[in-house]
Length: 227
Image 1 (cartoon, one colour):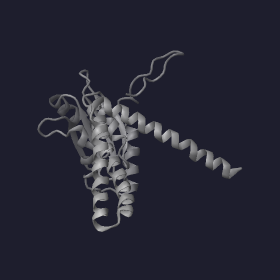
Image 2 (cartoon, rainbow, N blue to C red; image 1 turned 60 degrees about the vertical axis):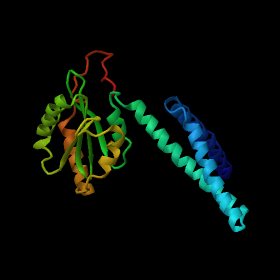
Image 3 (cartoon, rainbow, N blue to C red; image 1 turned 45 degrees about the vertical axis):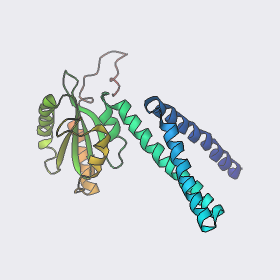
Image 4 (cartoon, helix red, strand yellow; image 1 turned 120 degrees about the vertical axis):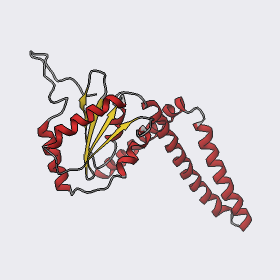
């Protein structure tokens, strides 16, 4: 019976994966109308080149099989990159876009909206082996004050951890949303795992904007949802 359950589980996973790919393609095509033609063109070119090489060396069958595999791989890579670019294009300028990017980077504990002003400029925090990273979204001039205030608030609690700050945007000295993950991953790892945990614990004790927000009284009083 256990063997049958495993087989059913594997079969159930395949339609789910295909549905996910179809949804990603549909989303990408809304932003990038040529994605299908480009991906198909890449596959045809790669397969055609390998097949031509196979005929030239007298082994078209083996070259055709290899060409099919490499064509599929090339199509997957191109589709993945264009889908990622389309996703960033849709997220660009949306509130909380930077937090969404940060939460998809492994090895980091992310707290969205640790600081915010009445103009909806917001600062997110990520903690990892590179230390503490503060990421601001909004007006760069107003964010300087927010970032400085957040650094000052954390100074006594986590003075032993390096602090980096970025402002998301396309201006000079700013980090484009699509490059935020890369910039984060390039930071030098200077903290051991135990110290990262300690820093996270101290920052949780310090609180953040959402946890410090007053909760309405009464039977319907619930904390506002994040994001």
